[in-house]
Picture 1 (tube, one colour):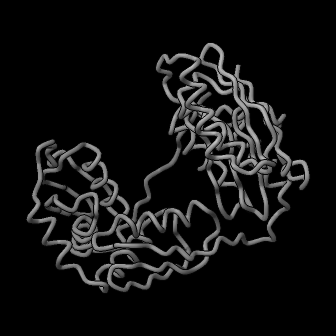
Picture 2 (tube, one colour):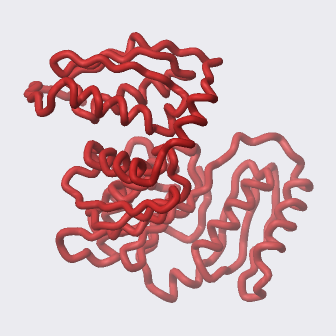
Picture 3 (tube, one colour):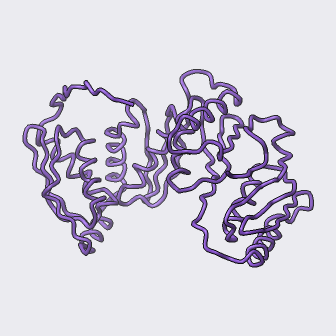
Length: 332
């Protein structure tokens, strides 16, 4: 309801202006997002002024963020002009051609050092012909994903093998406890309708199933789950609901039956469908929640206005894993 922000700025000058300028210049130079942007950097008493041309306001915000992460006390990006037609292909080609494995390793390591999501972790990179292998130990899935993303956004990186191990400082809680924490966190979150999300946990690996209204809601649900104690991996299988384009029941049903016939060849896993007023009723029995989710996704892909899922999941019952809510999915 209300936030009182009493934080004070105690920024201390840890590096010289010259060192900060060099750091920002190299971070900008090796950023994939800014690979054809030439941005000049001026630093006075820790305050940074950036000038240049980029093709979108998003790229300008990326330059702003990199400067802050490098240790700037204040960043002024008003000198960066946004021109949607800006493109310097010669500069882009030159940067990719000249970068070496040693430079890639150096800039990736420095990106990890300044990323606030990775403070305190000992992470290493081995680079061979642009292929980056990441090793080390982190405390949560978000840090593991952040390390890979930082490397992916570095010029010259061709492929990433993320071997980071997620290890919590204490003994991992049981799967049932992790599932409870994830579900409670989703229920508290203002962006996610937790009633539409099913949670499965096995060996600290969390899987999310169901249907959501937007890509933002799907990604946010995965982020919320990844922040819970004990989680080592997220399998986000949530299906994003599409804006319904009117289509006859006959056409939806024909398309959906063909899709289900291709997906469920095993006689022990059968899903039948019926469509009325654009609503697809799915019935049957399958082994796993992954199959359950696949049927949901196929209904949306076939053009159903809304899937009503009455599919029994044998795997969940047989293994007594911590699923929430009924197996049926009938939206409001």
